Length: 449
Image 1 (cartoon, rainbow, N blue to C red):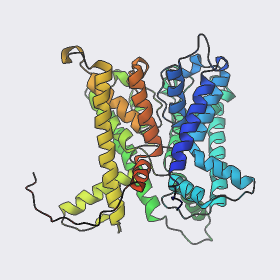
Image 2 (spheres, rainbow, N blue to C red):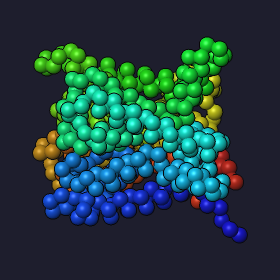
Image 3 (cartoon, one colour):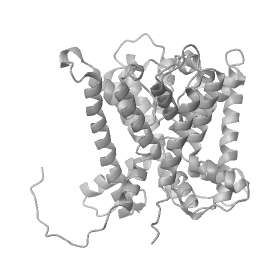
């Protein structure tokens, strides 16, 4: 009897193949300047680009030629949209039949449900992505006519929309930290790429309907309202917290408008974009902890962002609030999340926290297991920040990445891979090999707390 193959295995396989192909291309002499890079660094860069993370062991602008940078750009675009999406779109445009397995896999990657019109939705994704990225590049050219080339504008626009964080400049975007229009362009690209394609399409349709007075007013769906409201709260709350932790009471010689812009930008980029307009390694420990939380949460499901997702956070908060108030349901707004949704959210949070804890432990061993605490102060926070950044596919770093050992780089690569595909995909695949128990054991009460 033929065994059913879980369609969620396909994105796992194709992402791995894309990473290997990218590493092979990046290791070529035509891709690098000077003496080239090692196989580990090539694989690390390919993984970071495909998983739209942005962590780098070499400087993208100087270590790679134009050909190598184009390879990275293609990997970013491929990872942002998803291998299965691009494959299904190509089959659709060639008027071939797309299998049901591909349909389900794409639906799981891009939407909060698997029921959708594949062809129409994929074409809208391609057109929307291309339109937003070209618009972003054009705005950057108009705002920075003497500072940025057309190629650089397109590279950074694609990197921002895909929440990749790769930059052709060694200081990322720090040179424009005071430029409000440029900051707003990058913020817009990051937010549009991080709220999810379904939310983006629905919000655009809703705005268009609001502009037409003849058409009846349409109400956003519950899912979209949850994503938008939670995202707004995280961005605003993160910006306020970073402003307090970085600039209030520390007497730093920074103008108020600069403090406001950088705080807002860093709050947005923690949604797994990975750009920075300030030196991360010079920020306070409080700021790093705030950023770790934002990176851990990430963006919305079906987006180019990583993390446990804003909907997961909202469900978990509703679960604890409901149990605290003695409710049986986890209510968000006027609707209660289903029991299956709550269970998946709790499992995802535990899986994510467990992965972070295990990765931090391993990296502490590989990067300084034989160093006494007095000689390694600050290493724990730097390692934890790096782990959360990798698992959340953010790409922000305190500067630890380039100095990692080979084993440490492999751990970070695995975290980026898991973070991009999503822990739920791995959990779903593991469930294929599990058997449901038919024996129920007696229950007992234990003292808790």
